Length: 89
Image (cartoon, rainbow, N blue to C red; front, side, top):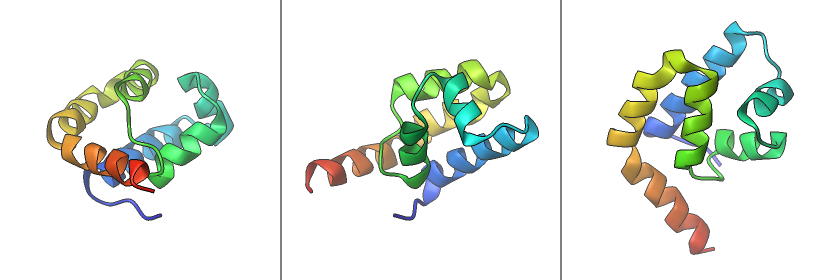
């Protein structure tokens, strides 16, 4: 599945912050307090970005608080669309 719009923008921003810390996906997952498979599903758009996930990202990368806020305010419709697609499978 290819993600687009605000979800892709936020995932790319998180990946860039991850790259700057030279963290593997496993290390990032550990820092976020989730299984690596969960992070993988967020990256691929197979799982909607929950408030719990966004809080974990903000805790790990406080420098991303404005991007996360923008996503919550402007990207919520996209989050709901992903959740609706999953329910309709």
